[in-house]
Length: 47
Image 1 (cartoon, one colour):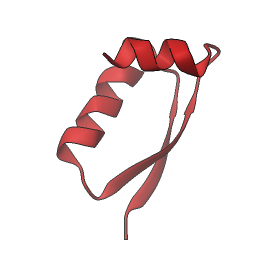
Image 2 (cartoon, one colour; image 1 turned 90 degrees about the vertical axis):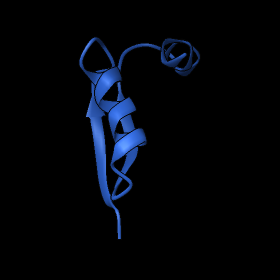
Image 3 (cartoon, helix red, strand yellow; image 1 turned 120 degrees about the vertical axis):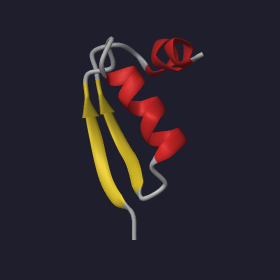
Image 4 (tube, helix red, strand yellow; image 1 turned 90 degrees about the horizontal axis):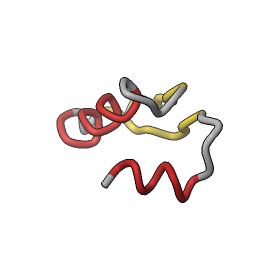
């Protein structure tokens, strides 16, 4: 069973944390990202 986590902020700390969770921690599941920016911009920042 995965541990569900949410990320508060998707700035210079939130983005690398998200990437490390996806790459290295299969036991964690990101269920929400709280940020003021729209989803399209957040998706662009991940590229």
